Image (cartoon, rainbow, N blue to C red):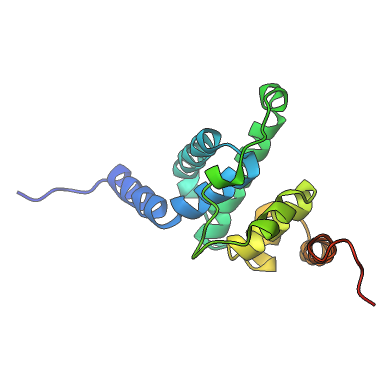
Length: 170
């Protein structure tokens, strides 16, 4: 007996593929943005629910990764705006967050990145840890590519200043 695949089954298979391919990257990004693993899991789950609902409207103008990243960023932003989120102490040890990509990151670098203002931290994490291009980041964040480039430049300058002990190089 042959199983007949209907439109819902195809969408579910596509969702499974997206989840298998992108959930770890999204989880890592959401953990860093929200500084809470349980909230990050909720954000990733909500991201995939939203993606499933919007699957028919995805035109392919950007990559799947960019599309999912934009959904996840917007979900994290919504969660961060919630009054409850602002009232709860979000200070957690970096060791408890799944930040690692290929090996152990330098702790001082991660501390410096996490101390950046949100828009700069967001740029660094998307570019260096999620591997998005400036164009993909522009699409995901809904800002001009030149703005992304400026944020990356200022982030690098601030990180260099912070990691070199606050001494500017001439």
